[in-house]
Image 1 (cartoon, rainbow, N blue to C red):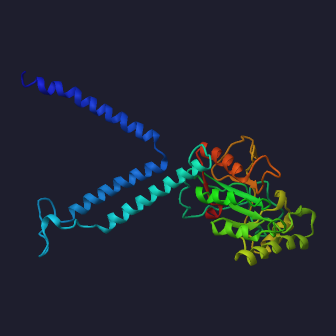
Image 2: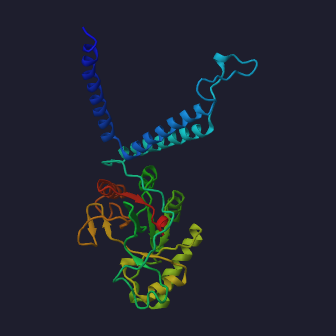
Length: 336
């Protein structure tokens, strides 16, 4: 065998190893979730931090003598606080992702729900949707009426109205999956169990105004509309400690008196919706019958007494669709 034969024969094996490694990496990437990819990136950062901390310990070829009384082979390795903190953060991310995967399996979801981005540092400007204005809307500074939040984030917002159904399984499901949502409540439906919605609030949901008795507001005088809206503001303040900034008119119907009354008792926004999800189907406001970044989705607190399923069935249908479409569920109040 001459000097050229060895390298020439070894080269194909090197190329084969490289191709095999490439296939392995591609397989790993394609099967990982977005969260897992983020964790791997963080681990890479940690490795660089560890290298940097080693370099900071005195440079190549330099040895550090132990303090008197220590044996070199038993001396504890140095602990670098920034690297330790990053490793702890990575461990928490990994544990949170694993818990989310487990919860998705328990609740029968097809895929793990996507994690929303951090709330925007600068809130988008919210204006009334064209065609949804009332007379002198802007001049009177009335709350904007909108069906979508202007954002490029691939997020949608889940809002749930009235409060008729009080399913403990729904609270557990939303907490375990960490899905944010906004409730719009009517007093005549929640007064038999204010405690259920206090638990909902304690688990992170925002409680907002849907009037005292859910009437068709444009048929009422200004004084009666104000009683319905401002009265519900006081119920929520007394029971849950805050006056809501959000109000949704029943059935999505309103007039100038509605918005004037709402403004008079502290309401800043009047969100409607672009889609409505039921336990067995979806309905759409837009002609393309599709989701869009920033869409507000409406549903209701309902169970088997009125629908063909439970609240968890409803949430499952909602999450399976938005996740398949590549959307995360974000908290509406974070964008207002």
